[in-house]
Amino acid sequence: MERLPTGIPVLDRELDGGLPAGSVVALTADPASQSELFLNTFASVRETLYLTTVRSAEAVESGLSASSVEIGDPVVEAVDGEDPIADARGFLPSVPDEGTVIVDSAEPLEAASPLSYRSLLSDLGDRIEETDATAVIHALETGGERSRNRVVTEQVADVVFDLRTVVTGTAIENRLAVPKFRGGAALEEPVKLKLTDTVSVDTSRDIA
Image (cartoon, rainbow, N blue to C red):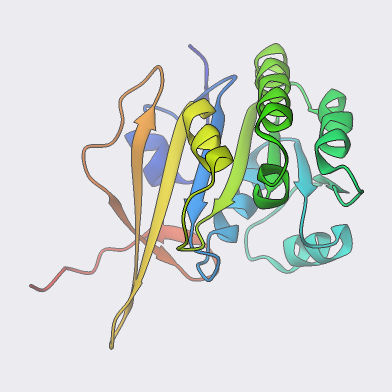
Protein backbone atom coordinates (compact mmCIF):
# COMPACT_ATOMS: atom_id res chain seq x y z
CA MET A 1 0.00 0.00 0.00
CA GLU A 2 1.33 3.44 -0.94
CA ARG A 3 2.46 5.54 2.01
CA LEU A 4 2.18 9.33 2.05
CA PRO A 5 4.81 11.11 4.19
CA THR A 6 3.54 13.27 7.05
CA GLY A 7 6.43 15.71 6.80
CA ILE A 8 7.53 14.76 10.34
CA PRO A 9 10.59 12.50 9.95
CA VAL A 10 10.26 10.72 13.31
CA LEU A 11 6.66 9.80 12.55
CA ASP A 12 7.45 8.68 9.02
CA ARG A 13 10.15 6.38 10.36
CA GLU A 14 7.85 4.92 13.00
CA LEU A 15 4.99 4.49 10.50
CA ASP A 16 7.05 2.73 7.80
CA GLY A 17 7.12 5.75 5.52
CA GLY A 18 3.98 7.62 6.50
CA LEU A 19 0.23 7.21 6.27
CA PRO A 20 -1.51 4.79 3.90
CA ALA A 21 -3.06 6.63 0.95
CA GLY A 22 -6.80 6.95 1.50
CA SER A 23 -6.53 7.31 5.29
CA VAL A 24 -8.66 9.49 7.53
CA VAL A 25 -6.68 10.71 10.55
CA ALA A 26 -8.05 12.13 13.80
CA LEU A 27 -5.60 14.42 15.59
CA THR A 28 -6.80 14.83 19.18
CA ALA A 29 -5.20 17.52 21.31
CA ASP A 30 -5.74 20.14 23.98
CA PRO A 31 -6.91 23.49 22.55
CA ALA A 32 -4.03 25.23 24.36
CA SER A 33 -1.39 22.96 22.81
CA GLN A 34 0.81 23.51 19.77
CA SER A 35 -1.20 21.01 17.72
CA GLU A 36 -1.55 23.50 14.85
CA LEU A 37 2.13 22.86 14.11
CA PHE A 38 1.08 19.40 12.95
CA LEU A 39 -1.49 20.90 10.61
CA ASN A 40 1.08 23.33 9.20
CA THR A 41 3.50 20.47 8.63
CA PHE A 42 0.89 18.26 6.97
CA ALA A 43 0.04 21.20 4.68
CA SER A 44 3.68 21.57 3.67
CA VAL A 45 4.25 18.21 2.00
CA ARG A 46 1.44 17.97 -0.57
CA GLU A 47 -1.26 19.97 -2.30
CA THR A 48 -3.71 20.80 0.48
CA LEU A 49 -7.34 21.80 0.95
CA TYR A 50 -7.67 23.43 4.37
CA LEU A 51 -11.23 23.70 5.72
CA THR A 52 -11.49 26.04 8.71
CA THR A 53 -14.63 25.86 10.84
CA VAL A 54 -13.75 28.29 13.64
CA ARG A 55 -11.13 30.78 12.48
CA SER A 56 -11.60 32.90 9.39
CA ALA A 57 -9.85 31.90 6.17
CA GLU A 58 -7.79 35.09 6.42
CA ALA A 59 -6.61 34.20 9.94
CA VAL A 60 -5.58 30.71 8.82
CA GLU A 61 -3.75 32.04 5.77
CA SER A 62 -1.94 34.59 7.95
CA GLY A 63 -0.92 31.88 10.40
CA LEU A 64 0.35 29.62 7.63
CA SER A 65 2.34 32.48 6.10
CA ALA A 66 3.94 33.30 9.46
CA SER A 67 4.80 29.67 10.21
CA SER A 68 8.41 28.55 10.38
CA VAL A 69 7.34 25.49 8.42
CA GLU A 70 7.79 26.08 4.70
CA ILE A 71 4.24 25.92 3.38
CA GLY A 72 3.30 25.40 -0.25
CA ASP A 73 0.15 27.10 -1.48
CA PRO A 74 -2.80 25.47 0.31
CA VAL A 75 -6.35 26.35 -0.64
CA VAL A 76 -8.07 27.66 2.51
CA GLU A 77 -11.86 27.63 2.66
CA ALA A 78 -14.10 28.76 5.53
CA VAL A 79 -16.93 26.46 6.61
CA ASP A 80 -19.01 29.16 8.26
CA GLY A 81 -22.53 28.98 6.88
CA GLU A 82 -25.74 28.13 8.69
CA ASP A 83 -25.30 24.47 7.74
CA PRO A 84 -21.62 23.55 8.26
CA ILE A 85 -22.24 19.92 7.24
CA ALA A 86 -23.56 21.01 3.84
CA ASP A 87 -20.78 23.59 3.49
CA ALA A 88 -18.08 21.02 4.20
CA ARG A 89 -19.64 18.48 1.84
CA GLY A 90 -19.66 21.10 -0.93
CA PHE A 91 -15.85 21.35 -0.78
CA LEU A 92 -15.20 17.59 -1.09
CA PRO A 93 -14.96 17.64 -4.91
CA SER A 94 -11.95 19.97 -4.46
CA VAL A 95 -9.88 17.39 -2.55
CA PRO A 96 -6.64 17.13 -4.60
CA ASP A 97 -5.41 13.81 -5.95
CA GLU A 98 -2.81 12.31 -3.59
CA GLY A 99 -3.15 15.48 -1.55
CA THR A 100 -4.28 16.41 1.94
CA VAL A 101 -7.52 17.78 3.31
CA ILE A 102 -7.43 19.35 6.77
CA VAL A 103 -10.56 19.91 8.83
CA ASP A 104 -9.79 22.44 11.57
CA SER A 105 -11.58 21.81 13.77
CA ALA A 106 -14.18 19.07 14.18
CA GLU A 107 -16.34 20.61 16.91
CA PRO A 108 -18.83 22.65 14.79
CA LEU A 109 -19.38 19.63 12.56
CA GLU A 110 -19.73 17.27 15.52
CA ALA A 111 -22.52 19.53 16.82
CA ALA A 112 -24.76 18.28 13.99
CA SER A 113 -27.14 15.36 14.32
CA PRO A 114 -25.40 11.96 14.47
CA LEU A 115 -27.01 10.92 11.19
CA SER A 116 -25.82 14.04 9.33
CA TYR A 117 -22.33 13.81 10.79
CA ARG A 118 -21.90 10.13 9.99
CA SER A 119 -23.07 10.83 6.43
CA LEU A 120 -20.43 13.56 6.04
CA LEU A 121 -17.66 11.31 7.36
CA SER A 122 -18.77 8.56 4.98
CA ASP A 123 -18.63 10.96 2.02
CA LEU A 124 -15.26 12.28 3.18
CA GLY A 125 -13.87 8.75 3.46
CA ASP A 126 -15.15 7.85 -0.01
CA ARG A 127 -13.59 10.96 -1.54
CA ILE A 128 -10.26 10.40 0.21
CA GLU A 129 -10.17 6.82 -1.05
CA GLU A 130 -11.04 7.91 -4.60
CA THR A 131 -8.21 10.43 -4.69
CA ASP A 132 -5.59 8.44 -2.71
CA ALA A 133 -5.40 11.46 -0.44
CA THR A 134 -5.20 11.88 3.34
CA ALA A 135 -7.71 13.64 5.58
CA VAL A 136 -6.71 15.10 8.94
CA ILE A 137 -9.52 15.98 11.35
CA HIS A 138 -8.34 18.28 14.14
CA ALA A 139 -10.41 17.15 17.14
CA LEU A 140 -9.83 19.25 20.24
CA GLU A 141 -10.29 17.80 23.72
CA THR A 142 -12.15 20.17 26.07
CA GLY A 143 -11.97 17.99 29.17
CA GLY A 144 -15.72 17.58 29.40
CA GLU A 145 -17.87 14.58 28.56
CA ARG A 146 -17.20 13.28 25.07
CA SER A 147 -20.09 13.68 22.65
CA ARG A 148 -21.49 10.78 20.68
CA ASN A 149 -20.12 12.33 17.52
CA ARG A 150 -16.59 12.52 18.97
CA VAL A 151 -16.79 8.78 19.49
CA VAL A 152 -17.88 8.49 15.84
CA THR A 153 -14.91 10.63 14.73
CA GLU A 154 -12.44 8.28 16.42
CA GLN A 155 -14.29 5.16 15.33
CA VAL A 156 -14.36 6.18 11.66
CA ALA A 157 -10.75 7.39 11.65
CA ASP A 158 -8.21 4.95 10.23
CA VAL A 159 -5.46 6.51 12.33
CA VAL A 160 -5.63 8.36 15.65
CA PHE A 161 -2.85 10.75 16.69
CA ASP A 162 -3.29 11.64 20.37
CA LEU A 163 -1.17 14.61 21.44
CA ARG A 164 -0.79 14.93 25.21
CA THR A 165 0.62 18.16 26.65
CA VAL A 166 1.64 18.29 30.32
CA VAL A 167 2.74 21.53 31.97
CA THR A 168 4.92 21.12 35.06
CA GLY A 169 6.64 23.68 37.22
CA THR A 170 9.76 23.56 35.08
CA ALA A 171 8.80 22.29 31.63
CA ILE A 172 6.17 21.63 29.01
CA GLU A 173 6.16 18.02 27.84
CA ASN A 174 4.52 16.86 24.62
CA ARG A 175 4.00 13.21 23.81
CA LEU A 176 2.31 11.82 20.73
CA ALA A 177 0.61 8.45 20.95
CA VAL A 178 -0.72 6.52 17.95
CA PRO A 179 -3.17 4.12 19.63
CA LYS A 180 -4.99 3.25 16.41
CA PHE A 181 -3.59 2.46 12.98
CA ARG A 182 -5.99 0.57 10.74
CA GLY A 183 -4.01 -1.38 8.15
CA GLY A 184 -0.73 -0.89 9.98
CA ALA A 185 0.96 -1.18 13.36
CA ALA A 186 0.12 1.26 16.15
CA LEU A 187 3.07 2.60 18.12
CA GLU A 188 3.94 0.65 21.24
CA GLU A 189 4.78 3.78 23.20
CA PRO A 190 4.34 7.56 22.83
CA VAL A 191 6.95 9.64 21.04
CA LYS A 192 8.33 12.57 23.05
CA LEU A 193 8.29 15.68 20.87
CA LYS A 194 9.55 19.24 21.07
CA LEU A 195 6.92 21.67 19.79
CA THR A 196 8.35 25.16 19.44
CA ASP A 197 7.96 26.68 15.97
CA THR A 198 8.41 23.25 14.35
CA VAL A 199 7.85 19.59 15.28
CA SER A 200 11.00 17.73 16.31
CA VAL A 201 12.11 14.93 18.60
CA ASP A 202 12.69 15.86 22.22
CA THR A 203 16.05 14.29 23.09
CA SER A 204 16.07 15.41 26.72
CA ARG A 205 16.09 12.61 29.23
CA ASP A 206 13.20 11.98 31.61
CA ILE A 207 14.22 12.25 35.25
CA ALA A 208 12.16 10.19 37.68
